[in-house]
Length: 164
Image 1 (cartoon, rainbow, N blue to C red):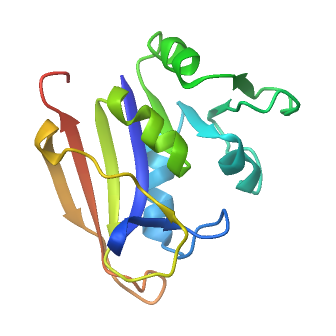
Image 2: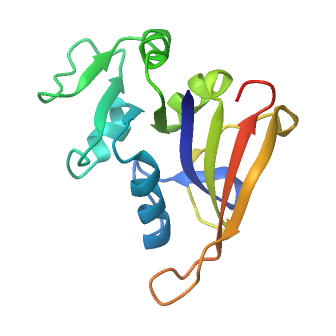
Image 3: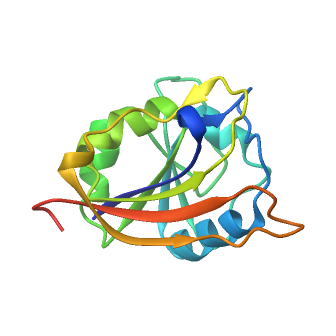
């Protein structure tokens, strides 16, 4: 199964200058719990934005840059199609960004974990629009707002109709 995980602010904003704009420990914890022990698929820019290899996850990077030299243990794919075909051999793999990778994989994903961040941010990177009628919301829960998580947020899981 191919899944996607993303945090999206009002207006579809997901980042700026190849970075996250907000800090929500609740969302980081959710991301870790969901992706732990699984393959995470990302574009080269997203990979390069990570502070380190995320523990207990296999990193797959999709890049057209033939000169990209990934560290040991990171698999590099030259196309979305080749990564998708390889991911079909797994129980689950998670697409984690960025915007171009989300858009390219969107037709293939069976499940989406979307953290809706209910705040306006000035961003330059956006989550692609998707056909909500093609998906069913299977779970929703509000995140706790507190001194560490100052933005209202909601965790929503979508499953593609007829596939899962």
